[in-house]
Each structure stands twice: as structure tokens, then as C-alpha cells.
Length: 461
Ligand code: MN
Ligand code: MN
Image 1 (cartoon, rainbow, N blue to C red):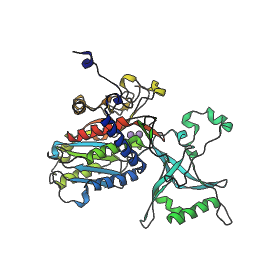
Image 2 (cartoon, rainbow, N blue to C red):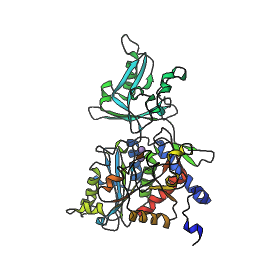
Image 3 (cartoon, rainbow, N blue to C red):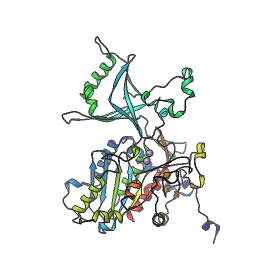
């Protein structure tokens, strides 16, 4: 055998593309960038995705009585979690082809009683969500996104800080001149969680009394949104970086954006699904919430909502019998579409380079996740790895297989184990990222494209 055949080739995907592929790669990432700029929170992703689903003739499953081959339906779970399906030729009991990504990202949430004043400055108190390095969230422009529900059920959506004409908000940090004590602290506790307070105003209300700046802010909010202080008690308001998603580099080969973990996989997997007509197997896309805090709660992957959706498919296909859902799960195949840590050359000592993913080298598979002795790992079976390799190799899709970091350094997990627990074949499969969980994350346009192609071919398989 020739040397080239014996050795596994691992190299940048940019080396082997032609002009028309390059055009496709850039076209897809332009579409991705505009999706990202209107979808910063899970609720906003759900909104964007509903309009994509409707444009592509998907129907809300609640409005459908009977399902047939080729039908396209979706279910929206509490405005934060989406399931979408195309019914295949094969009986659903032979299994579905499932791709699941998550649409929540690390951020700062407002506390239930957020508003206070100190020294004639008004602030919002925050509570961080997901694994963040707290110091990264100070002194950057932040936007306020969220929903306030009044007791009469009226819903007010807020998005301020994205338009060029909007104000932005920020969390201040100590000047270096006076930071001698702070600078001695470890990065981990240099910024206290209780000090992540958002600066929101400084003009006092024109009257006598205490906390007049706070009062003035409430007056502005009342004029703009018709709310009172008490209405924060029934709100979900998130602070996200006010940065736009943009092309990165002189060669524009990368994308910098907030929340690419895991919206880069959410975008590519739903796009792949929308292009599927009359598939062999029923195809399903999950966009889950709450992955960053352990997939808990009624919009997280561990909730029974997904089983409810699959049961509804079975009911409306007239195929629901005792035990049927278990049969569906046991015969199903899944890609857990989540990002992976790309090797950062500045910090490459945390990676074991033989088993690390590189940005620009294509979609990345993690046979298993977990940490230390594979604790908490969802470990894909070799048979299933072979099945996925076959799809990728047959279709000339560049891929890499890696682990998240060196063995004893750390680790991570995704939604994979939750579906594996139901008996499905599952493997993690996504896009490598630099600066994961930071306010501005980096991915390669080549990898966005190869993830999208991988998800498309998986649905067709
Ligand atoms: Mn993720
Ligand atoms: Mn994450």
C-alpha cells in the first residue's frame, strides 16, 4: 500500500477547496452571520426559527390531526425550545435520524429585584448563567434582551443596545492605578459575582427624596414599556454582548460572534433539516434550552417534552402502541451537535495535539466527552463511529475526531448522554471554537460549512 493511503491525513480544509466551494462557504457564513445578529437569546432563536419553519411549509403539530409521509411539523416548547420533524418513508419504529443542538449561551441574567441606586448612579443586579470567566464581562458594551410579563398576561419584548442609535450598557472595573489588591487575586475570584452590576443611568428625577436616579430610570421604563418596578418580578432579562457577528481576519476566513456555542450547530442543523424533502428515515431536529446549566428544567433536554413530541408524532401517524416509543428510541441514531474546543496555539499546552481539533480542519467528532476517568462520558460505540465515518467519507466531508483537552486538565459534556440513556446511538459532532464561553467566540467558516454538509448527509442517510 502507498504511504498516503496508510496514513491518516489531517490538514486544513482550506488547502483542498476550489473556487465554487469557497463561494458556497462564504455564502453560508453570510447567512449565518445575519441569523446570529437577530438571534442572541434562546427566545430570539426560537422566533427566527419559527419564521424559517413557516417559510418552508412546516406546520405546528398542534394544528395537525393526521400525519403522512413527507409531512413537516414542529413543536414550540414554552418559547425556548423547538422540535421539528419531517416524516420519512420508513416506519418510524425503525428509528429516526436526530440532530440536537442547544440555543442557550452563557450570559448575565437580571436578578428578580434588579434595580438599585448608589452614589447617584443606577444599576441592575445580575446573576451569571453558565460557565463564564467573570472578568471577561466587565468593560464591554452590553445589550439588554428579554421579556416582561405583566399580571394581565401582556408580554413586553425588550431589545436595547443592538441598533446603532440605541444606548449600550456596561459593567465597570477598577482602574489599574488602584487595583493593587485586586491584581493579586486569581482570575477566578478577581471579580466577585455580586460586583457584576450593570450601569444604567445617572440623571435624578425632578423631585425631592431618596433614590431619584432609580426613580428617573423607572419613569423612562414606564414611558417606553408601560412597566413598574414590580413587573421585574415576572421577567426574564438577559445581558448579552452588544457586539455584532462579523467576519474575522484579513482573509475573512473566520466568524467572531457572541453565543456561537451552540448557535453555530443550531443554525447548521436546522438549515440542513429545512432542505430535506421525503427522506427515507424520519428526520428530527432538537433545539434545546438550558444546556449550559445542565439541561435541567422543562425546556432543557432532560425534560419529558421531547418524549411528548415523539409520542405526538406516533399518535398522529396512528402508529402508537404499547412500548412503541422505546422501540423508536432503541432504533434511532443521533448527532449531538455541539461545539468543541479548538486548539488555541497560544494555549496549546492544555490540548493533546494528536487528539485535539483544529479550526479549519472540518467538522469534529468527540467519540466521548466527560472528564478525568471518562466520568459522565457519553461514549459512542465503535459500530456507530464506523456508520458516521462512512457517511462522511462517502460524501467527501472533511472531519476530525478529538477529545476536549488533555486527560487530567478538565472536560465537558453535552446533551448526548440524555438521548444515549434512552437507548439511541449518539455521538457528539460539531464545530471547533476558540475562546469558548467568552463574550466573543471564534469559529472557522470552513467548519461551519463542513458541519452543515455533515448534518445534511446524516439526515439523508
Ligand atoms: Mn455547547
Ligand atoms: Mn457551552
